[in-house]
Image 1: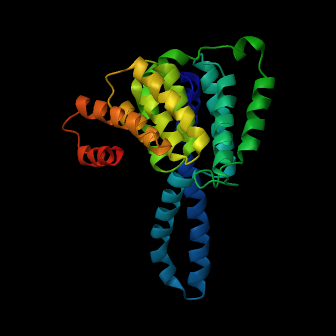
Image 2: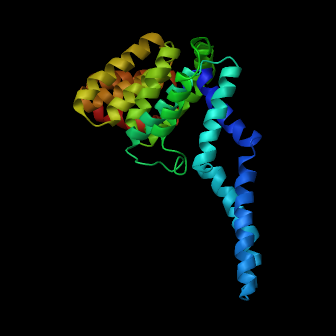
Image 3: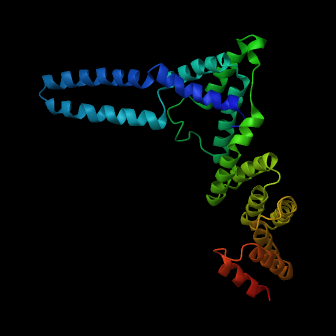
Amino acid sequence: MDNEAQLATLLAHEMTHATHRHSLREMHGAFNKSLLLVSTSSLIGNVPLLGQLSSALGRLSMAASINGHSRELETEADMVGIGLVVKAGYDPREALKFFQHLKSAIEEEGEKEPFFFGTHPRLKERIANYNGFLAGINKGKADGITNAEIFRNKTAGVLIDNAFMELRAGRFMQARRNAEKYVTIRPKDGRGYYLLGEIARQSGEDKNLAEGKKELQKGIAADPAYADLYKGLGLIYFNEGNKSEAARAFREYLAKVPSVQDSTYIEEYLLQCK
């Protein structure tokens, strides 16, 4: 998410599930169907089905919490929720962008129907619903607050933590997007530049090493105290075969954090640089 208005879209959607008692409505429907099944079964002597009723309803509740509600109730939560967004003074156009972000993320993953949205209306349909809503309101109500700068500053720490997790999972495209966004928010913090350097190095393509080196050098200029930048630079120089520059960067790294856990690992690289 890029701003507070998009967060409001998500919260309004989930609040609507609660205020409109969607879980209860679905459980009542399932309960009535189950009672009909039990009544019919008892007529033919299959009474043990009574004992299965509570466990079946429990599974239904758990499934709703993971996969979402029915298609109809999800659409209702979208439309009631966007009304709450407008009433609260937020820009409803950001709701559309929120679902477009989701759609882009799903396409990057290469999934036709992702697990979390498995029972939700397809995102294209939800985007169409929001477009219809926006077309039906007057221009004055289509304006509103976004609080983008405040939101980005408050969530920057989550953004960089998530980017590191994406890198560890090998999701380079997602990690790069988050790291680049973080650098725009915190241009004096070396972590974003270090992450961009690592993404370039770990992608395994020679053409990316030069780009990664540039990012690490920019990071050193912006935040020279962040030691990992020197380690990342040393690893890239080593991969390029530039042993003298690699050794210099590794020594700078150890000088800044002499008791670091991976000192033995770095010392081994230094031996190979001789």
